[in-house]
Image (tube, rainbow, N blue to C red; front, side):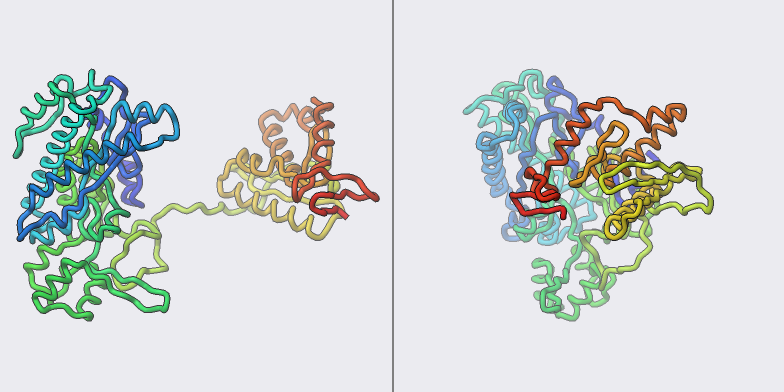
Length: 530
């Protein structure tokens, strides 16, 4: 756990999920145990299940300054039926997926535009009023999506794995906040339900852009974005709700919006009144605790899970990360993702006037170890189609560290290419790349002049290097088998057949080549060795 905290502080990875809690709410425990989720964490699934998600834009659900519950109910009913129909319309890549998806019929209806809704209703994101509204809205969506799923079960039948599920004996865990769940659970037990799950909170990164609203239940990252266009100019994109309020109060100006874009928020801009600063908060204005409390508020009435990023300022400590993880578990979340600003070299969104290009980055990088002044090694001679190839492999106290090659009297490109192979191989060895991985990459590369060497086909000079590296491994493991390694002549007949086959392949197009006028020629593409 300590290592997870340290790495999350360092670069935001890994996110964590609480598998015990996920399986506590597994609707079909008889079918199997859930062991993982999708990368964003909102959709834990059994093997061979698939995501089928949809999100309701909450921002337009306001009528005359009040939340429109009847409109939301209509949208929930339509969306639930739509997602259920998607299952039957979809073509899945494997029969096992098709079977599992149609037996459980999981759907995930969620929300987006949450931050914009709070702006419209003039409710601070980091407030109990906001978390209470979150619980009320999600309970409403969860309740009525299941009401619709019951109707679909009456028409088309309950999902195939209903028997043995949590619904069979009213095992759905829900508290009565605003709605009567006891009546609903009895109705499910009597009539069945069409879908094993009905609710999920997804990130909605792409669809929220299309809908021109805030993503998922995330707060706005910034109120003003700068878009760099092709002619070098900068265009300011202002959050429409913020823009409307600023113009209504007479505070709007391009200069002020530029200042907001540079700051990333309005908390430190003196021209803006305090009452607006409390409402128009952005990600970094909100303490991590309130990020988690908001996630927990939505999780309370979500079948699957909630995708949410807990944003930390750059100066956040490892202990802050640890406390966030522990609070998320205590409040009933099924997983949590944290991100400390600036902990990665490149991040999707940035605030401030410009992105610092030169920065001390915490992300781990591979660097080759220094070559010692003295090394020990062995030199091997490999017969190749280009001539005698001499390969020296040197080691330091940590293992093989460099490779040198020498090709008889051949110069020009052949020697240059061999030197390039040797240099890159040496760099890999000093960067702790496994020797076996290097061998796999070099082995089997073919040229038009393969050669039989000590009972093995050497298909090219790079293949010869791989053979020398492989011999090095074997000699290191069993030095007494020196002669057996170098002089292995097993499978002689098969090697000769392979050599003949390789010799007849054009290196450019793969067609057969023939000997003509003392030269190898391909009649298909015109390649010639001469």
